[in-house]
Image 1 (cartoon, helix red, strand yellow):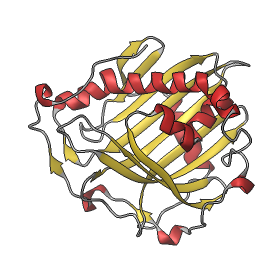
Image 2 (cartoon, rainbow, N blue to C red):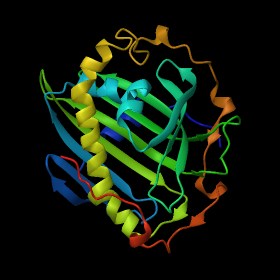
Image 3 (cartoon, rainbow, N blue to C red):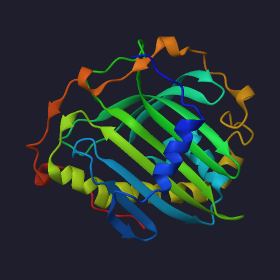
Image 4 (cartoon, one colour):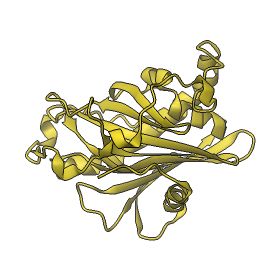
Length: 261
């Protein structure tokens, strides 16, 4: 199936999902972070939505942090590797991301098409999985599928913002129920707070690391090779290996319950 580059209606739909409360069940609310799960979704492809108020951080800074691959290597401790593959338009590219799962679960990776849109003082970033002929699934990782994942960053004045993160991911595996529960109770809140902490420190870090280099704001700085939508296809979950990890017990997994504040 050929890919469709997101248009204004896709961004509007994503923003509406972030702001709409119909059908969303609260799973977590503490320390400024709220997490909901869409009730209709099945366990393996559940849709999660998170919201965090970021005091002392502007929407512009959050937007930079989410985009800046070099800085992500500093704060994203779950990441194994990430890199950009190519650009389709001035606000759409294709990239790779792999991350660590708690042993003995297998690590996962994605190839996604990402699009972004500044909207007044707010910002939107959305992605979904695609297939790229030069980046097939690897034997040492499980290729997961992002059905829809993204950020809505809302400005709340001169030095405050709200971050929404919405994700629907098929991990391509029969995961044990405790893993699914732990994502909403521990992993997701911790990840949101990491973004917040990283955003607080970003202005100082950026001043020392190519402060004028922001290709997500200035397309003329983008040196990625151009690719076309015809080179890509939609990554369907049923075309990938589906592994059974449902028997992995919680006592066997090296998972930290450290819920950072």
